Length: 298
Image (cartoon, rainbow, N blue to C red):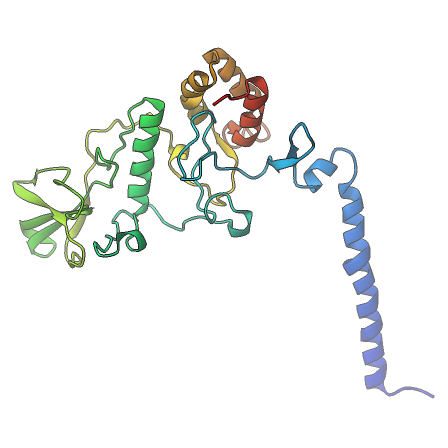
């Protein structure tokens, strides 16, 4: 007895679904798992895990770590990673960037009545603050163009008589709050006294004007030291940033600087395929090698 066409079609579809479920849902994944266990691939397939001397997993060479104390302060005996916007920092479950672009230069001022839960620094101010902090920690000039000496974005709101043109009638330092700033970073702008900003005031009609300042064009603190990676998980820093930290590490560990520099060199990877990207240093692996070479005694 011949089955109706619609039943035959459904049976054929069911057979195809079962076959492809077995092939693609079971056989193929098991094949990939088996290939991943081949010597030379197993480490990468398992997540490039890093183990201590007792066999405990202490991290992955593919995911960075924050070397800070409970209060978020940098541990001076370790090389510091670049900033991370992934969760509270290097959270694999919250991988991502801050999504703040280069035009994000004006802070959201905090409410004086609730400063801890309001306000948000712009990307520019975040970069400026990090640069000042790193400069103080490493003993170098942490100044950057368009940053104040205090580590805030140097941005003025310039009001003109006719909107975009005309005489300047008022100038406000948009990122310096009157509640916490003794005086703006510059006293006058084109002959007009500069005011500090006040929470709740509307500065939308002001012309946003970044002030470059006299910081060097090539800052002592490298760019990767003050900016997060796109994933927020990158364990690498530039060779320049690693070398900037060498003197501090040598002092904290009681080591010769040349020995620290040799560790940096040993943990530096070259350009991909010899010409793509820049040489980089894996901070997780470097700090592990540092602990092995000279354990830290607090």
